[in-house]
Length: 114
Image 1 (cartoon, helix red, strand yellow):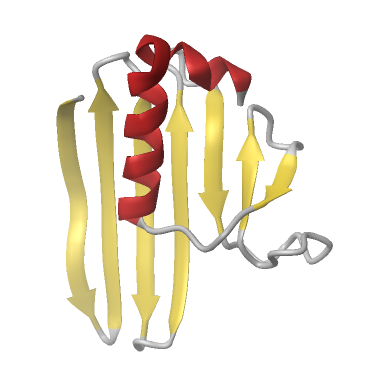
Image 2 (cartoon, helix red, strand yellow; image 1 turned 90 degrees about the horizontal axis):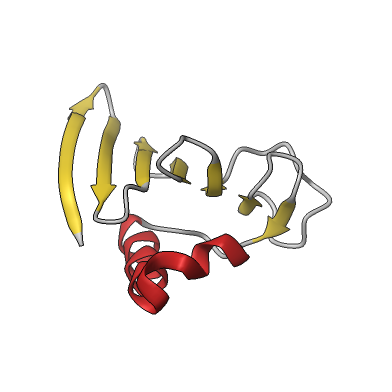
């Protein structure tokens, strides 16, 4: 399922743990991961899944700029930056499980429906 991955950062500095990585999947899609835990109390994350041509499939994040979303600050952008939808708080594990499931169904064609 995963054809390549690289870890750009995996460190703790001054109470901030940062993990930044990139994963490529067998269908050519890519996942860019950014997860930061600040002083063990505040978490900032963004997981951006893109097609082979770098167009957005889904980005899950918790940037606090969509207060109208019922799951604020957690939300997702689906296919377009402007298509913002509610989302549960995501983790690397949840995102990978979702992607593996989608890619596995119909050889990945299902993600065009998202």
